[in-house]
Length: 154
Image 1 (tube, rainbow, N blue to C red):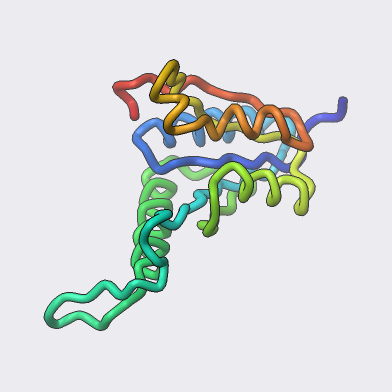
Image 2: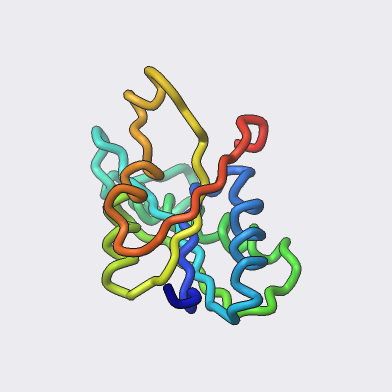
């Protein structure tokens, strides 16, 4: 297997996301691989994404616009707080169900490796919430490295 040249790092913007990005950057350095950090915002199932969010003195914005702007700011802030990477680092926020959005991106853009966190939920929480990591591991077009994110870092 060839060394990775493009690494995809899906994150959920939880506290453990920084640990995952740090690990990916550290792993990418010896290979001079590029790293792309991505967050997939999933619209709520029972609320229309074009629902307007407004308050006195604000311009009305859709729920999707507010969520995407917030996610972009959080992601940019997270990356600015880190030491400058020694590899190419890109980031973006996408809309869609996390697992399918990440899988589609990985396949369409030819990533060599996916590095992502897993919360290690078991039993009913996993059944009810599903496991993005499990779905990606089982269907990814490339190797997937999962890192356990401790509950206190969530």
